[in-house]
Length: 123
Image 1 (spheres, rainbow, N blue to C red):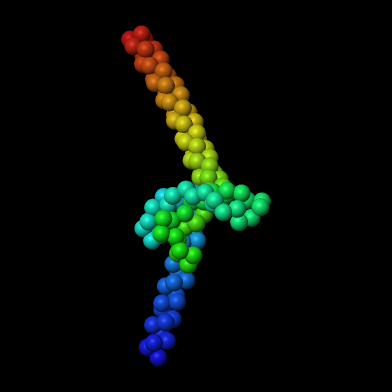
Image 2: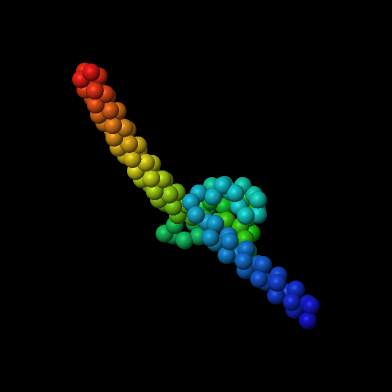
């Protein structure tokens, strides 16, 4: 019974790790979950005629067990561009809000100065 429970826990941990690795493959990977650095790799073997010299981001200690990164270069770059577009839009929105606040602040200061000058000249 203990052996079955131990095996079940080991399988569950393995499947959880597979899930974490698949969820982590977003954008251009810097590190693999195993701790190795990922590098850009060009497939020299023309495995398929329609994909000559395909590029990958691949773990330096890659093994085909599902626990290491081997992500197509195009997908990684596309996801990174999408992430940068969203970040750019957020920054642009923040810049517009800052400009609006600056204009309203200057308008408020000018109004206060005008009111203060009217009060001083009336005395």
